[in-house]
Image 1 (cartoon, rainbow, N blue to C red):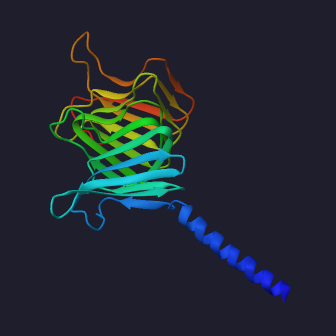
Image 2: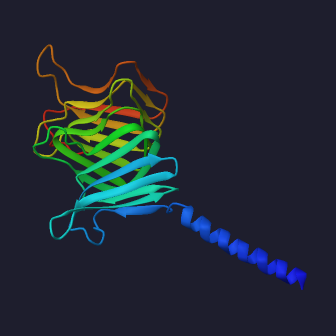
Image 3: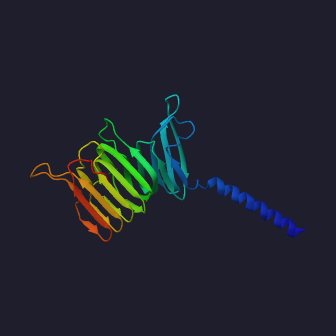
Length: 251
């Protein structure tokens, strides 16, 4: 009888412990398909992924059917996958801890009057895994901007950037590529790209970078496909640069 009573007590304690654990644990991986707008959204215009000690907090911002600002968020402990083609911007905030995401069939088009508009804005250390084909378009502005920290690309997918400038890292900020392919050129029906990747250091450990860059505008003015204040280090992978007059050449 005592053994049966003890068994019942242990079983009850195990169930209670499992319930408490499930309440405390953050949600597991989720693919945020911003083409399929969540219930209550009429439009999703931005998505923010912020690194925390408990995982990644993902927040979608937009408007509802009454044109009121709304948002939805979730915390995830394994990975965050961004997909779809509805949002105009993504913010990756890793000031407290590094933040990582995977891009899978993502298409971001950021344009408008705001001079600060970018497709992806990072703060702190950020890591992006490329899956499938992803496209960032910002016709007369910058595609990816770093407000501090490092940016690392890996995976086996592709990232196509169409715009005036590709990736711009801030002072003392590094860009590293460990896999995947990056294709950069001017946007359709615009001039060619004037700047590819600019960073404190650029390191290519694997993968490939392809840049279609505009020719010099004068004897004292030229455009850089890759520009690094403290050096460019190519350990593996490949870099291909071509000079083109306009963006008619496809990437």
